[in-house]
Length: 408
Image 1 (cartoon, rainbow, N blue to C red):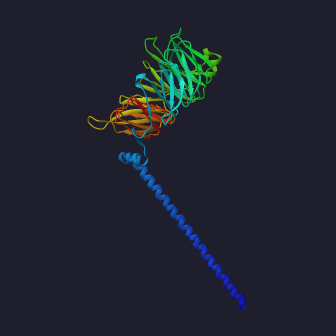
Image 2: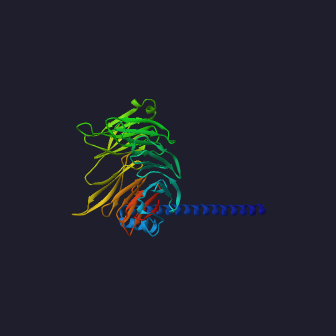
Image 3: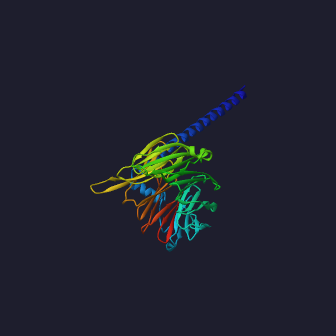
């Protein structure tokens, strides 16, 4: 009996010790959990405070961009391409390449400044357009045309008439505006292989611009009619399928501009609508309707619609009796939301765009932002910048005898 009692006491003691250890482990785990929560809350608080200051304090944002995020670069830290200005090279950028066309040779450079490929492109005065991975080059007022993707010429040929304008969509489909025929303008439409699918003939108006929807289903034509007492511009949406079957009855929608307005540019930003720029406003046109997106203002310096889902406007705001500051307004064409980027600088010289990238030439400085209004890169130069070319992942800063390369 005594032995049994002792064994029971030992077991009971072990149970007490076990319960104590479990309680201690639970208590330790609870403390660890609370500690983790405190750390997470603290980090979230710090992130929120830093983000808020980054957004509102320009000096702090400049410090972070320069010293921590390393967004500031200069001519001494970048790869460069040497150029011969005496040959009058045509410099262009698309996708991940900077291209130089000179003496019927097209050289494509990547971000390391090395030649990726050299192609024979027999064009003296080029017209160039690009979209994504495709670039089309044509002879201005001539017949030759080339479609290029990456390091290859996909097709080339000659077109009857004189080429005055070209366009390519993200799938390599091309529209070509032709003049000096029996018609005021002719628009020829080609697929990726170079097969001509149809032509549209305009007898009373001149075609200023064209664009092709991303799904290849629609061709938008911007035309100006000078025949009446008042200048009128029209945007016609053509069904590609219908145009191949019945070219006379392929227009699915027509937008007529205000009197005296001239269309200057257009850009399909998705398969459903094309953004159209006129002298004094920007219009959104679909296959069934149209909508006014923006009325130009006197304070607007530059407006660009060649972006993904947005338009960009640089305007000036008074900051004193005889002083101004400049800002970039990026307006979303889907939901009309706006992003703002403040430029505390002199008057911007130019604005260049591609995809989601906006490059601002400020003379001795280039600021590259995205369509969300965030700074991507700031380039500082000791000399006046001649020009900028912008691709989807690359930017070229042009001087007389070289091109500095910024990789995004």
